[in-house]
Each structure stands twice: as structure tokens, then as C-alpha cells.
Length: 378
Length: 157
Image 1: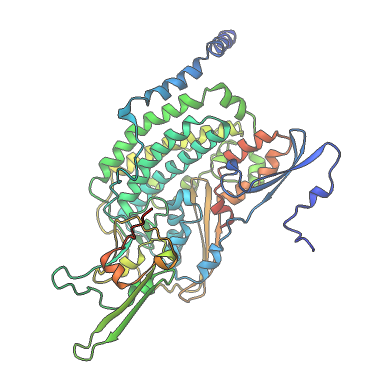
Image 2 (image 1 turned 90 degrees about the horizontal axis):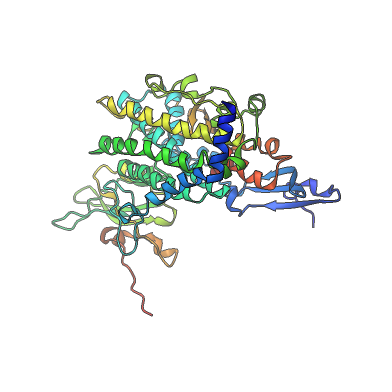
């Protein structure tokens, strides 16, 4: 019987004395899904890490080649299922650029609202599960309580909580429901105090600091070398945010700051994400005050047949730069759909950060990268 | 200044002030008025009006005839190709009469594109969210099931 070269990492052939190989995952609670890590350890120290991915591979990009442009939209929600709205937004913007259509102003404002709500929901899920990994169980219950409020808004708006399929190519399918503004404003008001609560639970907690400060340092230089984006690069001192760098969907109209820290460690990534939630609340409150009226769906042909060409559109998803590369050959189906997932590219830095750390730190590092395996494997 | 901060830090560590601050947050949620847990099977949640749940094929409320005109647009819109519409051309009215309608729930992802495509609001995703079945075949809904809703099987001990 010959082993497939990819299934068994080569490094276990060269084990020095005192070294052991530890298989972590794919069914390990702190790997956030089905990530498998093959760790070579010397005592508690990590000598090398090998990521084995693909356990959740569904061939989303290939599915795209067999669907029409409109039909593929629900599938992108299932990549990063924690932030389905952002996935849908990126895909809709890419197809709109391909067929030269712009969503009406009302649709753009609603898109910003929901994308920011989704950013908070994604960060809340991250905060809860990350704290659980570290050992602070309480935060999970509170973050899921607030996340539930956001999911309720999603459900009222588009009828689904997680895989929302909220936007359509050219705008929106559903108009805002009665009482959306009040519900949203109420959530924003209460959420400001909730963030204070999370910070009281965690930020100054000595155990939390001992576990995170100085763990998993990835400086700005390395971030750029690996193509890291999102909160990870902002925690390394780079104020890089696509919402500011190349505004889409009318983000240039809103006043918000890019939270930046310089520690580049897990603790600063935590602080950056907490501050990002506050900035999202700021954007939502501004957007709520001025949702323009008018149409919600631009004129889009019923049968989408874009002219041959290719387009790359990227947005700032909660986890980093989410890009869609679409190639059209003039038929009903895309010739190629390529997704640039933030989780996959950020996960590549794990080896850089984890080698030399302790096994327990690997858990903290995976947590602060904020991966969703649905997106890593697609 | 630095000495003062260091001393304050030691006092905080000694008296576990940060821990107590966290505990204060925890105890704030102890009153029963702040409990948010839903008792699901006993208390049913009220799902949203636009909720995308079990599909339904609407019938005319008065004469009980189906609203479906057999245009096949839902089947064409479906990304998973799980809707099969069977029609026959009526010689007298020159219209399509619906004969069969099959909806494979086991492959459905409730994206709602079929109800968006329907020109006469015949196919609709309803607020019903309990669609579990003991068999795979039980998830393939025929026209009768779509019009009347699922028929729950009572099981006895």
C-alpha cells in the first residue's frame, strides 16, 4: 500500500530524540471547525507546524461555473458562513462591475448597514469562541446574546438568520421592514454598554493578558510578505482598510476611524476588533439617519449575459480582504470564479507565529487569526 | 509616577479587583428578568414574517384550485434544480394545467429564488420551520403535501 504524499506530512520521518508528533484536529474544539494541525513538539515547545486543510472542501468555485450569475449568489453565503452578508455584498459588487450596473443609493445605504451589522456579528462570534478557547467561558454567553439580536434583524429583513442571501445583483430584493430603524437604533444604544461589559470581563483580566500579550507576534513586514489583511495587519501598525483605501458601496460618505495598534500580538488583535465594533456602531448610526428613498433595484436584465471580460473586486470583510475574480466568456455561466478568502491567506501565517511557542499558545494564535474553515477550504 | 502605577498594579493584583469587576458583570445577569433563554419545544418562537421555511403551493381560497399556472419559472430559477413541474396543455382553454409538482426539500437551501421568480405568488416559502423526516423519501414533497402542508406521523411507544 502506498501512501498519498499529501496525506502524511513528510516531517515525521525526521524526528530527533525528545521530539514527538502531535495531531491536533480535525475534530478539536479550538481549531474552529475542521482544521488539522500536525505539530512537532519538543516538550511543550512547538518545533514545526503543518496545516492540513480541505476537510470542508465543497468546490464552491467549480459550482460557480455551472450556475448562472444570479444562481451562484446563495452559494457564496456558505463560504464564510459567519459573515454571509459581506460575502454576498462582494459577489454582487463584482457582478455589477462586470455588467456595468450600479446599485441605487437606497440599496447602497442598506448594504452598508447590513454589512456593518454583520461585521459586529462576526466579531462577536469570534470574541466568544476565542475567549472560550482561552478559558474565559462567560464572554461566550454574552456575545451570543447580542449576536442573536443582530440575527433577529437579519431574519426580519430577509427571512434567514445565517445564510442570508440578502442582496441581489443590482440592488436588493427586499425593502426595509416596518420598524427596522427603531430596532437597529435600540440595538446600537444597548450594544455600546455591552462592549463595556466585555472589556470589563477581559481587557484588564490578568489571566487574559498573560495568555495573549506577546503571543503570536507578526510584524507589519511579515504581514505584507504573507498578504495578510484585516484586523491582523491593523494590529501590526498598518492603517490598511479597503473601506478607506478604495471605498465601495458609498463608504466614503461615512465618518469612521481605522483602529490601529502597534503591538502586533494576539492581545492587540483583540483590542483592534473590539474597537472595530465601536466604529461599526458609528457607521450604522450615521447610515440610519440618512437612508435615501427611491428604488432598491437597478435595471438588470432578467437573463444576465455579460460581455467577455474579467473583473476583480475586493471588499473589507470582517476577516480581511475578500476578493472575487470573475471571468466571463459571454455565456450565461461564469467561465471562472475565483475567490480570494481572507481566512485562507491569514492562516498561512500560522507557521511563522507558532514555531517556538507553546502548545497552549497555538490555540490562542489560531483564535486571533479568526478563521472560518468554510472559507479556507471553500 | 511610575512607582505609583506599579503600586496600584500590585494592589489591584493582590485584591483581585479586575476579577471582581468581571464578576460584577456576571452577577448583573442573575435576575430572572434578564434571562434570555428560549424554552423551545414548550414555547414556540415567533419567526419573522419574511421567514424562508417550508414551501407551500397556494390554492385559491374559494374554489380550491391551484394558483400555479405551470410556467416552470421556479424550476428554472432554482440553483439546485430540485423543482419538477408537470403540466399538460388543456385543449379547450389553451392553458397549461398542473398535473404534478415535486419539491425536493433534502437539497433545498432556502435561498428564496423560486418564490421570487413566481409571477402569480403560487409558490411561497412559509414560516413553518419543522420539516424533519425519518426517511429521505419523506423530504421529497409532492403536490398534495405542498398544498396541504406536511402530514406529521404520530408515533406511539
